[in-house]
Length: 176
Image 1 (tube, rainbow, N blue to C red):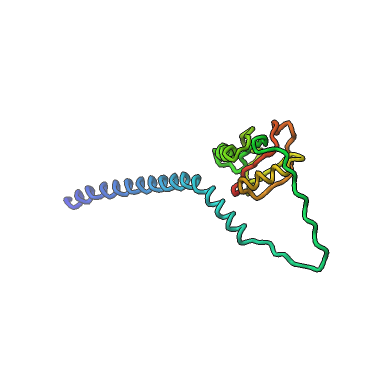
Image 2: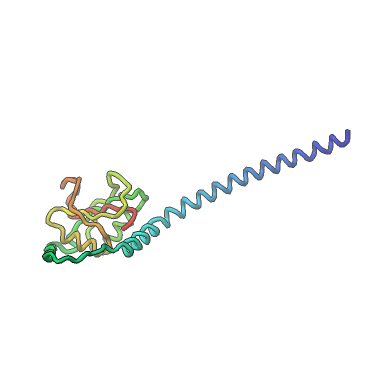
């Protein structure tokens, strides 16, 4: 009977050890997951920007020369407004919290007037887009150059009333 009593004293200790180890493992997994989420939000924009720069450098278009007539160069867009007169609307299209406010401060630092700052109607834009109202293509190209962006397009899907007086719209994507 003594043998039975000593076995009972050992088993609760083993059970308690297994329970405590299991709880510690769950806590470790939760801490690692929280760390990945917090660091991922801070690092992701930088990683996306670096990947876009690398992709742009490595994917140069192949130009085939032919005996055909030379293609005329497009006419240069005329810039009518100075940076201080050009009003820009900044919209977050990448879903990262605070991205539009950060981009708006960068736009202001370059000398542009920031109008509305907010969220785009949808998220998931792969690249940052600069859209311009009719007759403001020159300002959009200068803005693109000043902020080192890659995509410029005429205004699409927004009415002048929605622009609230802005000449350009910057919709933030995952990459510049």
